[in-house]
Length: 234
Image 1 (cartoon, rainbow, N blue to C red):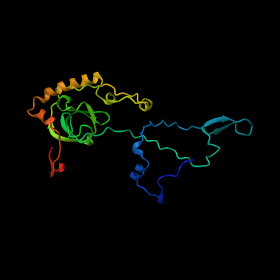
Image 2: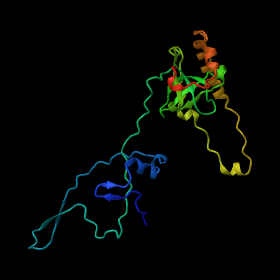
Image 3: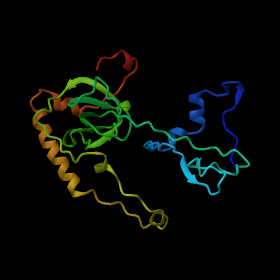
Image 4: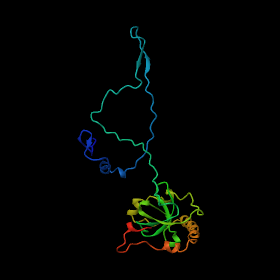
């Protein structure tokens, strides 16, 4: 039996909760939205059947699809199929490939990194470089970075196409191995370590062209008493 709707009408055409409140109550943000292509509409055509009997006209036109003889005893709510396609997250105007950004959350909070590109998921591909401040190739949400006015010319740096979202996907952990205590920390893949060295080598050549840029990337960001980030210019 279907449950009562979470949103109800307090007046004709006026619901108790707004669209955004109902969206939050249903936890739609946690659900995976899949797009379904609209099925081509077939034109409903009537068909002609032959009727026996001398006084029945010989032919009769009947609908191609007959109506159901029975109706459901209760109204069954049907899920609404969304046909909207997910758009790629728009990149902030202050963030471009080569921008030096400050990480605000996560393991490397306060570190300065170089933005390499935006991935298909909308996340940013950044690195320290690792040899400079210990930040490896990783994905970062642009909401958790501060874009600075310092930029690095990446025209001579080639970013391989293999650095995508699938590159950072981790293998699923089994609950059985975790409960039995057999799960061991896997060694860092040698292929990814080699990829990091290749990217670092190309970036270090560019960083060396700008005086004091290496020291700037090494330093961490922090606030002292009386300092307010909204009054600062990065």
